[in-house]
Every structure is written in structure tokens, then in C-alpha cells.
Image (cartoon, rainbow, N blue to C red; front, side):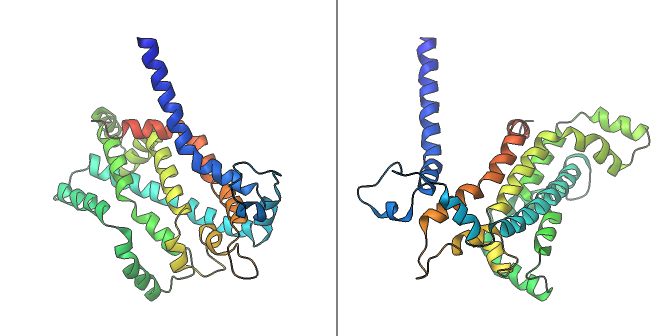
Amino acid sequence: MVFARRNAIYMLLVALLVLFLSPFGWLAVTALKDASELRVMPIHWWPHHPSLDNFRQALTTFDYLGYARNSLTISGVYAVLVTLASAWAGFGFARLTAPGKRAIFAVLMSTMMLPGIITLIPTYLMFAKLHLLNTYMPWVLWGLCGAPYLIFLFRQFFSNMPKELEEAAIIDGCGTFRIFLRIFLPQSWPVIATSLILSFSWSWGDYIGPALLLDDAHTTLAVKLATGYVNAHGLPMPNLVAAGAVMYVVPVLALFLIMQRGFISGISTSGLK
């Protein structure tokens, strides 16, 4: 009975894996087809003449690597800054005492229910008045402000750390910032990995922000993928879009594979009390 139940669970997991990976698999298959094969009926589930030429054209139709560099710059800077800022804020909510701390934390958590589209126009007007359009400073400022969900993760993790560690550091003459930097931050690697992966993927996959705040020379790969692959008649070329999209997800997958152990550990432990 136990063996049959285990096999049933494995079969269910395999079925879910196939279901979740099927969109990416179809994207990869489309990237191997030429343009004429995409229009035939009935659909060719596998290309008759697979070719990697779509990937070459996807890289050369526009400056793919240049826009990828813009995306990496924005996403990398934002991920590092928002992780450090969220860790510092989470430490304050978890270990420091101040009047109204619970109320401030409740307000912070309530902002998670606020759709980002509501603040889009005010954000644009604010950065326009500060003359920060067509620069990467908005992502720097967003990173320095932290993110509510990441602050919550760090706060939950730091709340579970023993009080004795903090007391021993105070006896040794450490101030608040040194306690955070030398004791709490090194212990929070699972949450740091989670924060880096989530924040990097948020920024890497963002389309609206770069499209609104950046011109064509400074924009990101997400924006250029949506507008850069068109033929002489202005029509999209799905085979090149698919090839560009396959390469587009590689950095996020690579980051997750590198940090997956810390990511899974952070998700599973940060909410425990």
C-alpha cells in the first residue's frame, strides 16, 4: 500500500512537472522552426528541419547583448540594494523597540495589497520633476527603499534568532549596526538568497517601468524583445521572438540554480515562529 501510494505521488509530480514545463518546451520548439513552418496547418509539433539560425538572427537583429547588459545592470543593482535595505529594515522591526513599531509594520504590510499600477503615474511625475528619466537612478532609489515582502521575510527570520547572540555582542561592545552586520546578516544566507532571486527576477521581467522611464538607448531587454523583432512590413517574427525569449530566461534560471538550496531553505524557514 505504501509503495503504491509513493508511486502515485511520483506520477502526480511528474505530470505536474510536464504541465508546468510545457509552455517553455513549446517556446524552445518554436525557436527551432523557420518562419514558414509556423504558418502550416496542421501544426508541426516538432520542426522538420531544426535550426539554430533563429538564435543567430535574434542576437544580430538588434544589439541584443547591449540591451541584456542594461537589464543586468538594473537588475543586479536593484537586487543587491533592495536586499540590504530590506534586511536592515527587517532587523529593526524584529530586534529594536520603538513607539508605534507595530502600527508602522502593519501599514508596511498593507502596501503589499496595493497594485503597482496605481502608483505608476505619480511615480513617473515625481521622477520627471527630479530629472531622473532616462537614467537608472529610479531603480537605485527603489532598491534603497526596500520591498515590503522582503522586509517581512527578514523580519520573520531575525525574530527567531536567539536573544543570547545579541546580548553577547552588546557585552563585547558592539553597537546596533555592528550586531546586524557581523552577526545577523551572515546568519541569514537563506533569506538573502531568496531575496536576491526574487528581486532580480522582478526587475529582470519588468516591462512597464523601463518602457515608461527609459528611452530606446537605455531601455531593457524585456522592452526590446516586445518591439524589436519585426519584418519590413512591421509584423512580428514569432520565431525570432521565441529564440530571443529562450535566451532571455537563461540568467534567471542560472541564478536560481546557483542559489536554489538557499532559496528553498529561506522559503521554508522564514515564516516559522
